[in-house]
Length: 164
Image 1 (tube, rainbow, N blue to C red):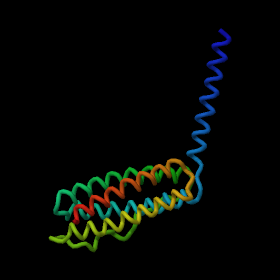
Image 2: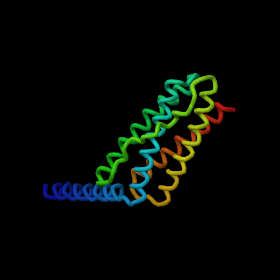
Image 3: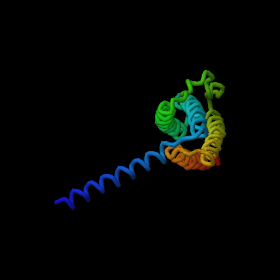
């Protein structure tokens, strides 16, 4: 009976140590992680603004569907990055005052103009994510950067197909 109690206690200690090590490796962050989250929140807020313009003025189902998808994804990422910044006692950026996409004109050329603007914006997001991968330390931030790189490269490829 003592043997089984000792095994259970030992197993509990091993699991607790493993969880603590796991928490340490993902909760450790550096300034690059903070800067990435702050800048990517602003970048995502701009993407949402741009997508909201397309949701109203987009002509093709592709543009309207992409704008709806982007709004949902970017809001989820913002919530996650905001929680990290708050846990690190860092500033969460406010909404940008300039309206991204406000200069795009509704009409027959809107979709092409919007896709061009969105492509440049997504390329910048990929660059930001690639930068944090080089110097960031926070595991979840690096996972988000991977996700952003993969998703935005796929979106860029799809936009190129739509334009071609």
